[in-house]
Amino acid sequence: DLNTASPHLLAYVAGVGPKLAKGIVEHRDKSGPFKTRRDLMQVKGFGKKTFEQAAGFLRVAAGSCELDGTAVHPESYPKVEALLRKH
Image (cartoon, rainbow, N blue to C red):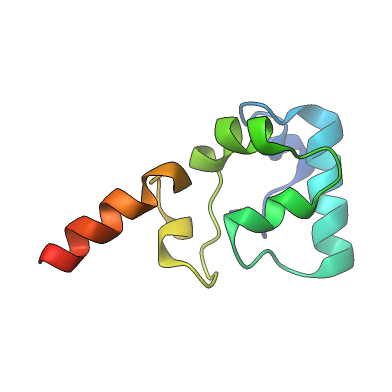
């Protein structure tokens, strides 16, 4: 979970590494809990490519988007949402 993980643990996520992991935690400490995965784009050094690599491994358990607490990658949200509307 983005709101509880340590920099050491975040550093193992694809595309993140130690420096960016530290930045994620510093951003969280300064700005408060992440509400969505997209909030990561506000972290200095966290760009579109890093988001594509890392987002599927990072969760926001109590965020504003239920899918952010799952293993579903954000690029697949429209497909999942369409499937849920059918049922």
